[in-house]
Image (tube, rainbow, N blue to C red; front, side):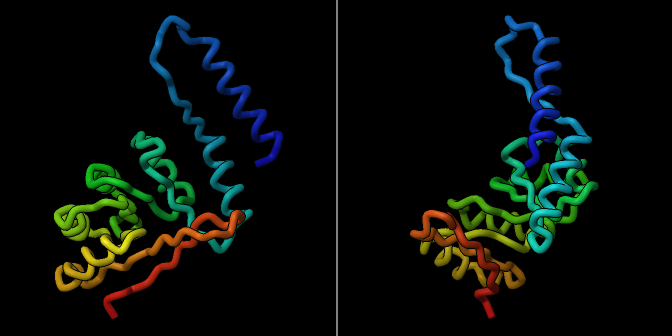
Amino acid sequence: MSLHFKNKIFQYCKEIANKRNHEDELGFWIFHPDLTLEAIKTFKAALPNINLYYAVKCNPNPYLVKFISENGGDGFDCSSLNEIKEVIKLGINPEKITYSQNAKTSYEILESYKLGVRLTLVDSNEEVDKLSKLKDQIPEMKIMIRIQSNDPFYYFHHQILNVFD
């Protein structure tokens, strides 16, 4: 991220914070469409072969999620059924959603599949076993495997596989 971009964000946040009632104990979030679009473009330019999936749990605001969808976001990383349902309500194709909850119940896996989600994440043997038992009910589900690496410069490696083939 360029220093110019960081300064723009800081200045914008400072202006809004100065307008607030400082006795108000509630926090606030800032969504500036131009800065968000610049961040998307910067990410895509730096990593042109990587798909940009927004982690909905970071900020599930529907205006932000819809904006990202309409301005270059490739998909959405959801960690709950509720997040999946909210993203779908915005008219976003469920095939652009990954279900990354690391302790999904069988019910939640089946429900996400019924909603149209076709990519999930596993990072434990228990999750693999659970999906294996459900394979006949979720035949088109692809699985992304998160593997912890000992390399201090490469924390996680994601590989998309169809383990049911």
